[in-house]
Amino acid sequence: MLLIERIVVGPLMSNVYLVFDSVAKEGVLIDAGDDPDRIIKIIGKNNVKVKRVYVTHGHFDHILAIRELQDYLECKFYIHRDDLPILEKAAESCNEE
Figure 1: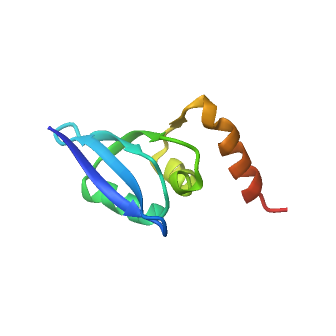
Figure 2: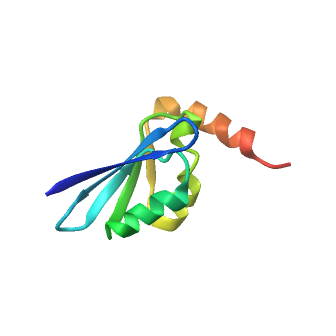
Figure 3: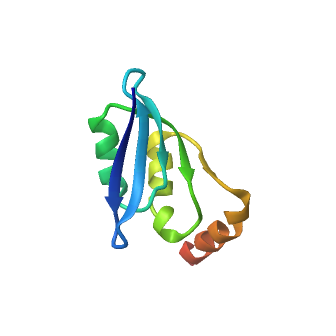
């Protein structure tokens, strides 16, 4: 059975979705807004192996936790190529000098 768990995160209350097969215990994460520890806890509670992270668009409230989640989940994330300039600008603005 396909299950969807909605996780509301961050000050803008962005939606993160954990979509997974309840039998195979494999799934995907849609968006990575904020609060990676909370998202990881819910993934663990459901005992799910996340295979991919999909980002619906490049705004900060959908990508803040992507680095931590990618490191923890050891999977790739996907975003539409038209949003790459937004993602690159976000990365530039976060670089420490």
